[in-house]
Length: 226
Image 1 (cartoon, rainbow, N blue to C red):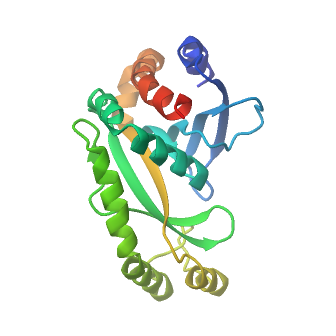
Image 2: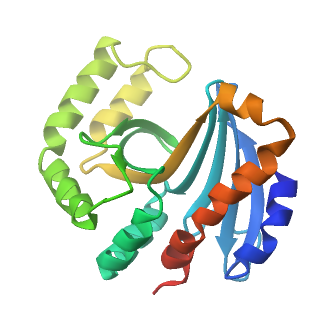
């Protein structure tokens, strides 16, 4: 990952950036992200979308993501400000998909159940920006129904904690008393099966350099726009 970042340094001169990595809790998966900041390199969580690599047993996921509320709001605002430009950029990202998630929080901090909003993912090629806003509006109107169903699944044991255990009493109480409105997250991503990655051998770095560079216009649009 450090070699890839070094090779892309000139491409990312439009904004200060750093490298951050970690493991997914209760999972064998891990991730590395390139995050962007104004002046403070320690501000890993900012208002700017990240460029993320998720490494799982199934392969690698490359994404531009907005997974916390300030970042989600910024991404959505930028798209709304210039929908036609976003759609032009999307045409060049035909192999990527736009994923819109809703999240229900079951305990403080980063404890959420994630699900895709119905109708997603959608291919970026030919993507209509207006669909994002109409789908969020429609889903918001039906949130009470989705929330009721998800809470039932949690209480009944049909939906389990990511560790595989049932949700405990404190988590169920928190989930039931909170979440009056849905939380959202967006990922614009491409997935690479593990067998395809294995076949790349020493060519893996230049392979991903190409796909990351394809995301440069999108990142500049989302990060440098006002």
